[in-house]
Length: 400
Ligand SMILES: *Cc1c(COP(=O)(O)O)cnc(C)c1O
Image 1 (spheres, protein in one colour):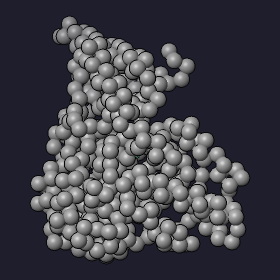
Image 2 (image 1 turned 180 degrees about the vertical axis):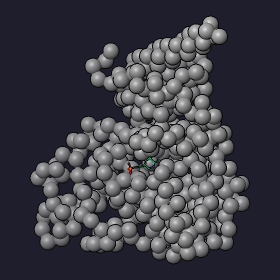
Image 3 (image 1 turned 90 degrees about the horizontal axis):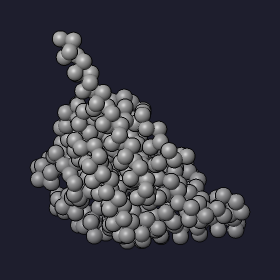
Image 4 (image 1 turned 90 degrees about the vertical axis):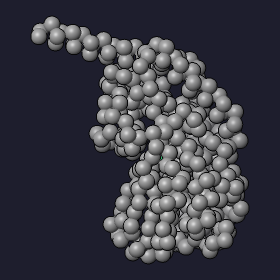
């Protein structure tokens, strides 16, 4: 048994890359200034670091202008600023919002709150592979539709949305398109310019950066449309052009930019490496355990994601019996609640299959040896549960 658990939960969070930790170091120490202090060198140095980071982030996602990047505390806040911000600026009464059943709670629950404030809400279903149908989305758009929110990559089943097609539909109908890309940026090629996205949420800690920092991309020049009107969620010093008051955390911003640049630069090679490990893990599980079913379409899919059902086994019991592996059954945000994953339920899977489903997230520091060890341990436990079940059934039939 390894001396610490093997981390296979990279959708919940990722470790901060040592190169990112090193980049942040000066800003925790001597370069501690407030980026908004315009009267001295401490402030100027911090401001320069923040503005360099803003440019780096804009470049990494294909934004035209660094002013399109608004720093937030993470993807949750970015989703809230995007959706609540658009509706507050426009007025929620009568406005129509469209989203999808497999979205993260940061989007779904925000939309539900907006519906309570008078907006009308359409939550579109997903197909068996986990994607929304673009024709259904196009049909759902009405004259009142203000914003559509569709995540770029699903953190539970790894499904990638057809964003270019969705963006084309939204542009044609003059609807604002927001995408929660917390699981996508740095993991797949993503260019807001060529995709034509209007609003995009990013999180630092999902891409080997620090926790507590993220960004909302807000497009300035829209195809044939007017500027996006956004109202802030909090008031104060007027930072981020009034959209997000509060002192900017320069160390986190520097780390975020460094992590994003690294992730984008290394993405093609990393995706290939991680997908090979993921395929190896699935093949081993099939060999050693059998009765393995993949949840969500096999492609296109995030390289590091496996979400698999083991017939006749309980995923919670697998997790409880294998403390040497860090695994999960779904989103960490919902794992505090004992409810089944809303994403697997949205796929239309049976309760039995949902209970037997394990989410495995491979990442930058995952090795082939770890994958092999995990496959053996999981298969061993699944076989044990199945045998126990069968002997229970046999004992019951003997008693009959
Ligand atoms: C993790 C995650 C979030 C929340 O991001 P934070 O930065 O932790 O607030 C939102 N959406 C998706 C898709 C995520 O994976």
